[in-house]
Image (cartoon, rainbow, N blue to C red; front, side):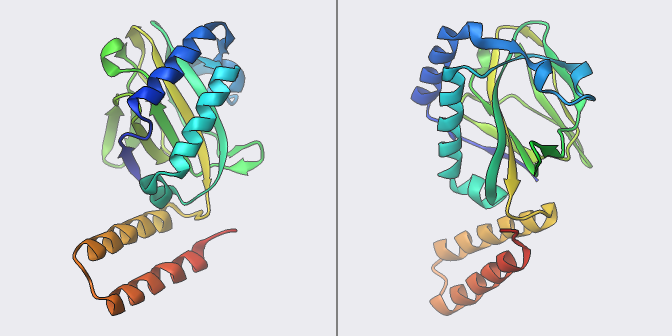
Amino acid sequence: MLLQIADVLSAETVLAMRQSLEREAASFVSGKASAGWYAKDVKNNDQSAGSAAQAAMEQAKAALLANPVFQSAVRPKAFVKTLVSRYRPGMAYGRHVDDALMGGMRTDMSFTLFLSDPATYEGGEIVIESADGESDFKLPAGHMVLYQTTSLHHVAEVTRGERLAIVGWVRSFIRSAEQRETLFELDQAVAGLRQNGAERKLMDHVLKVRNTLIRMWAED
């Protein structure tokens, strides 16, 4: 599953985050320290664990947990890891795949939540590979791209300006990517039935099927 989610954060929230992060610019350090042994050679960015970054990550996680599209697509059990990344001119992150385990927890879905207006920097697209080829994303501030953690991907070199983003890895209640996608599509069908005024008896049966599938597939 490869999905864009718009307006996860409001423009006002993103602006406040950027201003706080700018005030703590000295807290950013090389991102190589958090990379796995294989990705370390191709990772060239900065990240922060300062108080502004921590506050931004907590706000982002709360917003995602309240977002119905994220909930439906991910079925989140836990945020395994989040970080605030910064790319300046000359920085990039070469082709890699994210670690399957972080801190002893399985990672199922990854996301990039953009904090910088795309007009303020050149380059910096996240390029995600799939069976259909490459898809590149450089989204408005407050928007995010969500993808399977198994996906090969890279971040193109930034040639002007600064790219700030919150990046995260999530463990799902549903281990299988195919099962997660099936439930996501079923949610879309349920929403369509509700909008079209489906009779209650039909909705009862559809919701029974959905709940049965979740019960069969979920790992609690």
